Length: 313
Image (tube, rainbow, N blue to C red):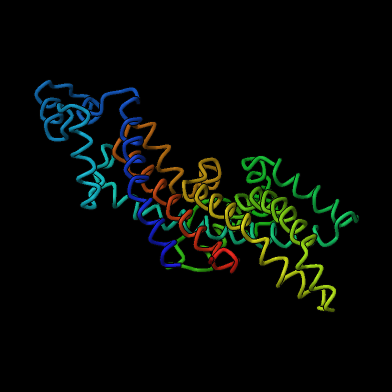
């Protein structure tokens, strides 16, 4: 386990380096001049020159990258042009919101998708299998924005059970926080649940047809023990892979869902930053998102070993 963890950590260094180069390089291709954006309506050449000198915009791009990566390594992601606050502070404000929403969505997706996938595999060829497959296909095909609007109409407008939009921190009011995030979390988890169901069903069908499962059945073990302890444990590898990737996608920010429910998370932050040409915020958010993906892949590798003892050798 320690050797595997060491190898993955060593691989992270060049990966993060190339990711930072790509993020900074692509940022330079965006239209617009950040110095002119910061200067505002007063296009005084002296002010623009001072801004260029202050933010090293008058230097060659490789030199600008070195200044930027030096700040990143010291915990300084730059200053927001539009809000005039450190990017790290903005990320610290928005990340907990997106993390809460992503965690709730992932729990909903796992509860629905994995359970439905196991039931569908055990009941292969029956009406239950066909019903679960149809429901999962509907979940994958339903657009998030349409489902979000329908949930608002039913549970907020018609029934009045939940607030239509907004966000409340769980530290302020846990129940109100749950009420404001349960609908967007279900919208995000719905499509992931359908994907998880199909992957779980395929992995379970393969596991249930394996020799060790037939041996377990021949020994007279109860069906529940065979399915959950023997087949399910060996079918977890693709589920862990997909779960890590989908959770990384959720952390990157669900733009449409956050816009519909007015959730102040990463998605809204990155959209506002792009429209306002707030380059430092864009770079910071994308860097944090890419790092999250890499970290989640590392956790997935560790999860493989913990779930399947055969991989430890």
